Length: 234
Image (tube, rainbow, N blue to C red; front, side, top):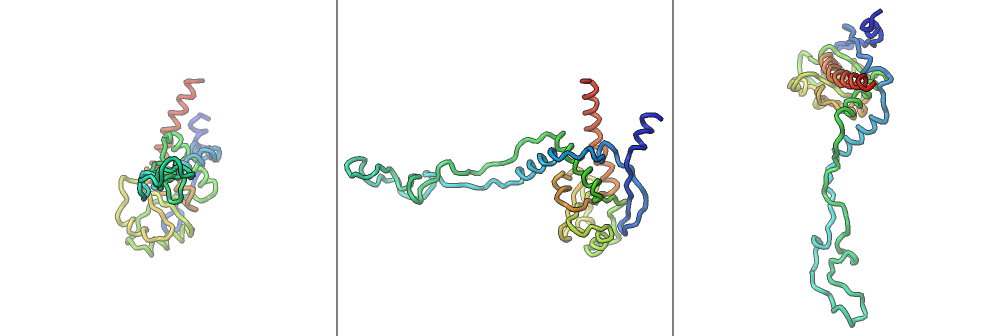
């Protein structure tokens, strides 16, 4: 048996459903993406930490002695009163004075390597597949862009709690956006916008067949480059 044949036999399979919850086919899942050994909890933790840090507004601010209200006049002479010397009521030593080294507006974002992000995405997809919470559908199109129809379809797909819907393409179709935007705890993203945090935060992930193919193609490109590098080093 050749290497290609062995690889094919190792590939996992997943049912492809329609929006009525009926099986309409099967799809092969790449072992290097959806295998259980791809789950890396440390990498997932790093990706979630970066996402949440980048999401912080960082608008906290305190007033120093320059910004706090109050006169700048010296309250009493430097010597001869027996009291401690003081230059202004805005001194940090006094009540209602300025704050020393307090937090100022800043960004909490930091650089996160794209390779690590894609590795975390592989780990999140593998985790969802291992938990049986990954659903592949042939299409996300319904006869009418009605919220009620999409709610019924999600119920048939056993998506009763927080759900992430991943669609393919450059832009989201208007009828799909209109159909799901008012559904509680349902998030709709494109395949090139999905983040590991989205997959971990939602209880179930629903991918269209096109989104699965494009995600697999993107993630396999990174894997092939990594393996080629490892072979050169060896």
